[in-house]
Length: 218
Image (tube, rainbow, N blue to C red; front, side, top):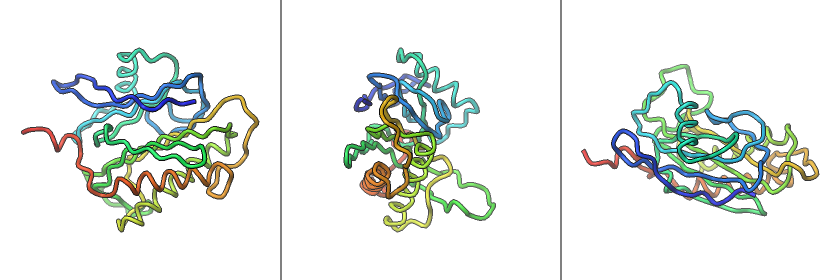
């Protein structure tokens, strides 16, 4: 089982910066597109860390690993970054599937947009999901696609001309030792509630999120 996230802070560049921490009671199977802990494997924790919109480090995985060490997180985990205040995370549950989303949609773009320079204020949508059944490798990969489709549907329902942002990330976790479920598509046993929960979470945030760094004095 994956815990509810704990909201905490790190002191960085003279400011207290928010981050969310999920801890697993036991190691979980996971698939992720995150800069730290991406791919398929066993993971013990998840971090979702706020960064300023000016963030330009070229070592995000090392940066996240350093945060994990400071928090005393052991073993392999997943690390995500976002420009929004992670304290504004939205949680939704559907059919036993649990989803948490931090949503920044400052400049959504179509996935198949022409080859033009990426806007500076891209925002980020980070999705963390827990499915209470063991998904096989193909089903885990399919679950990422399902969550992404549901996010894109929500963005369309919000009336925005895009499918996401260039920095969006998805993490799906599940138990490691139950009978294997082979499917994760949007009409499968677990993909359907995953899609509904992701759609509801992204839709609930809407389009008015202000980046964390834009709220700082000065």
